[in-house]
Image (tube, rainbow, N blue to C red; front, side, top):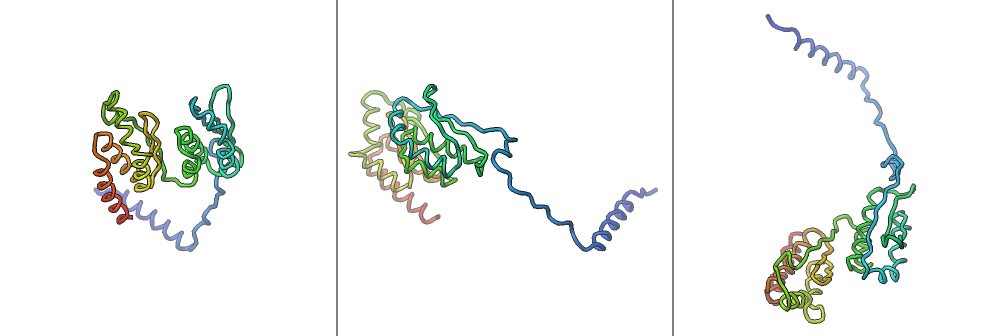
Length: 224
């Protein structure tokens, strides 16, 4: 004995198709206004706090207006300095156009605290595919005493020549703060710059690193 379920479902589909063809029109597509930042978070104010290290306190005072102007006027984010807690505090406003602006501003301030210039760090506000990557010399190779000092010297080069050459070739910005290294750039460019810096730490001469760097950047230029 055969079941009647399949024919019933087919009949229902046929009836539905007949009704849609009879009307001949689909319901109007609803249009919704884009949600604002405070509406996405159910009206709650979003906060970010960025700690200020002791050695960046004076540079922050000098460059405060350069940080304040793009964050407050262009990104529509409130910013203040908490003197008691030694932190830069950021929060959204009712007219903040996008909730992601808060994290971009926090990354911008954090990059300045790591030692990047304002004119370099401000690119984090304007471009989406930029990142900051940090690592230490001891993550690559354990060095102590004069060996560590020579490794830092190889990274910088005479008058910073090696560092500038890597920056210009890879379109990145590099900060060497004692044994910590911070790189600002796109994902692919950070990888090339990091590989070059690691080779220098491991003891490769600068000339050999330059030649490898030229070959890799030429390949990157062809790809893009």
